[in-house]
Image 1 (cartoon, rainbow, N blue to C red):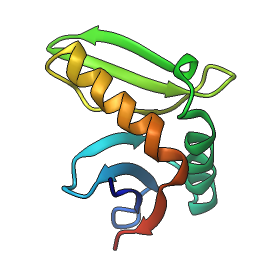
Image 2: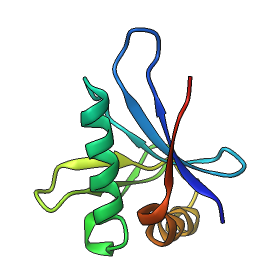
Image 3: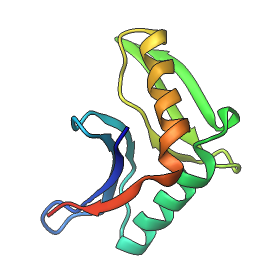
Length: 109
């Protein structure tokens, strides 16, 4: 499965990354980063923590099921999309666990 990190910087704004699959489905989104270096450190943290279930927090928020990937200090690294079921959420977490640690970075212009 092809999975990649895309780095975005809306015109003059902050840096963001997202983890996407080949069909452009977003698996994870980051918070805003002030610098490109900070954004890439976020990706490295995501790669480091993503294989381990203990770093995922799952919740149910109206109207769907969500999750966050957290670092060992419990700070949120990134968040997953809103899912319609717990099963869909677990499927996405499984993909992130398996592929994020080796995903390449692509800067989107």
